[in-house]
Length: 75
Image (cartoon, rainbow, N blue to C red):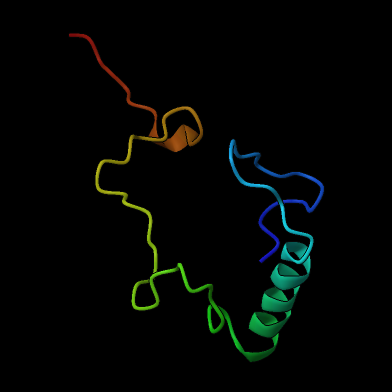
């Protein structure tokens, strides 16, 4: 899916990288581009659920959206 550059990776303590993993990931990416997003998944993924970010307790964007800055008036 191209989420991270190929030269960066997260290291694990116990697992060794298998030389077939990059080829497998590229193949899955190509298939998903060709037949549609999320059509091909790994067996360890929950096939019936689409992940969504929980945004119920999202903090205000005061530092990134100037129009949302709170204005306080003193009397």
